[in-house]
Image (cartoon, rainbow, N blue to C red):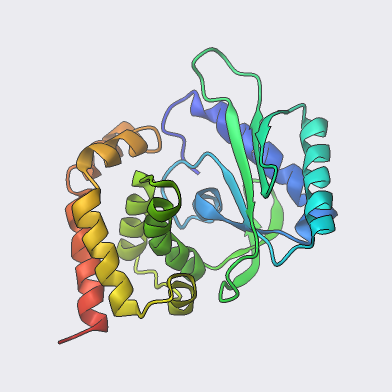
Length: 248
């Protein structure tokens, strides 16, 4: 995974330190499936920096949720991380490590459960930490990333420029998405979903929003090359996919 700035090396080291500790904790690896931007970047599917750790889990009982929280707490204590905030309902932690003033110093660790039943997983080797973890397939990642744009807005009224960058990148790499994930999560036909997504990107997302999110996740020269055309190129790719699905 790339680091856009020299100071990001500290955050990357901590991400990998936490992920290695999780991979070595059997109570966690028996339940969790790795996903998200950090997973995709470590496997070479994405070419940007990512700052959080995200996982899926199947349906968890109340006792399983509590045990999972305790297993994470053990990992954090062993690493000397401070838990500054955590969810009282789900499994989400904001952990801090020591860093210089005005440097990034917080890692979000989150588990989504129950995960969509149509998600597909497989064992993947993560060479940078010399560990194998069960993770989402790239087709599953792409489908969930497509859905994330609308879900993020509906749940939090927020927009993440990285969602648009990742969709753009996945299309350009020739990856395919898993249709069943979109259909399960959105309860729409694929043409209807893509039309909704096109309308949203066209009306709600601005170049300024993309710039604010991406300028800390990409090296400056790469950010400068893509940010001016990212929205329009992504719309072009989405419209091409819509035309393929609904060739009227």
